[in-house]
Length: 183
Image (cartoon, rainbow, N blue to C red; front, side):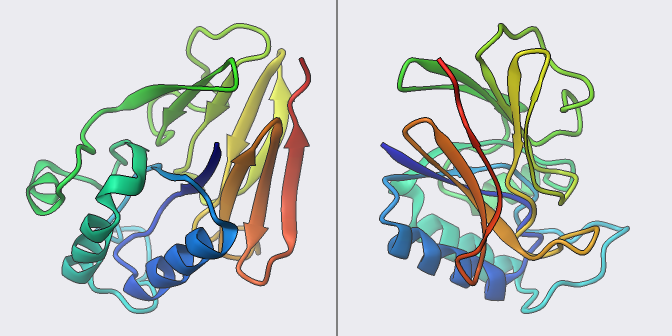
């Protein structure tokens, strides 16, 4: 199964449309959404194509493809009222090809504050808007970056997990970060 990870949409219909085009191009089986869907947040500028209501409507069109979605620090109960899939959980666990994946936004547990995980497990978060593909104390730590508001001069990006390979890609198809999970 091929999974595509999207984080930190922040209400940008423009970037969400591009991400969903990539979802189709990648021929991914499911989407994993890492939070911060509609609101841009008080510290962020308005992203290109800011239109939270249309972002909700477009995400709802893909609800059957969403494997997991978690709540970001900019998400609220009122956002859940617009979305036709659950997104208020702080974390979720996925199992992919025999590997446990802890999915969260990153404003609670984070790469710098990991939950109890075992060597070989995967931890994935959004929140920082900075792509990561690394190993910390035997745990694979990942972040697909932000589609709408990337930071530290990184491009807008998303993540793809296929087999034992996690790749962060920009919207031109370039690899930004990548890692292969060892057994």
